[in-house]
Image (cartoon, rainbow, N blue to C red; front, side, top):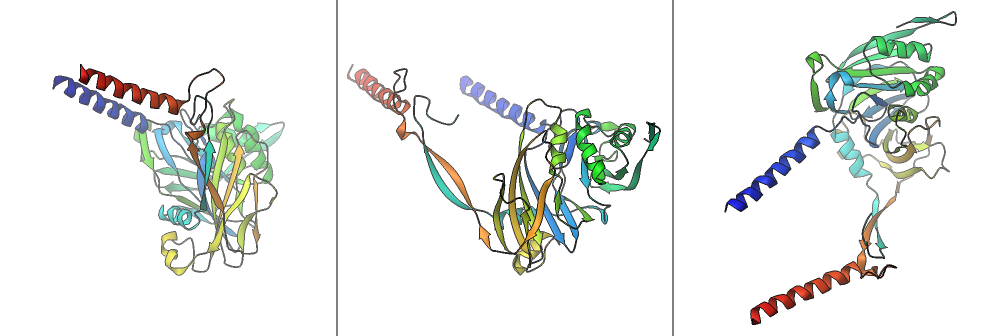
Length: 358
């Protein structure tokens, strides 16, 4: 009985430790560029892009775990915000993903060999006055936000430093890219009200929506790599973009020949699904699902988006199923895993029979 209690106690302790490790995991802020001590970026992200009448509503999903003073998120946008950032409903993402789910196709992968299985402020530089101007500011959920317009990359990073926004010096080239394009920056950090004295915080924030005028839909994909550019290891990002447009057009990639850019779904949104989109869609709008993959540290421009003629489509997604039946003796002369299991079973049966007859 005591041994059983000890085993049960050890099991509960292991579960408690596992839970503590999960709760202590570092932050993962999607899209944009997140900076700070212990901050990591989840390479798999979902974004909703609503583009109607030359206005885009960009919706992303922040999650934060860590020390408040160690966090900063910077998102570039092509023009001044048409309205302050606001919270929307997570159900919009759930509905978009459900409606656009690809057809599943089972692919059997046979294994061979013995080991069958898966494997800052204004300054004076060069005689020119560089400035960064605060265009607007406010609070959304537990985040304070500021919209900035910078003349140079140096004035932008000076402002971030002076105002306590963490960033990586390795991101300078990415900041410069957007400054030269004349874009604005929306910088987020944890509100003092949410974490007084810079305390720790672990919260999921309902999706944040930003709206701004733009003649073409945009996704600032290059900015995402800025948050991880300080690492020597290249990381692959995999994003899903759910596009919502008027029914007479659909969101599409401008470079249709790139194998890393894939259309997975296009279809009309019916009246029954409209409430689940929390004001982001109307009956008859067109929903598309685009997937893209790219690596951190890229110097490529932002992913190009355009509009195309509407056409219903549902892609196919492969689901890999592993088959160990093809396992055979490896070159080292070892027996297949399945055969070893069979022999072990026979040996166990033989031992039991021998002990019984004794």
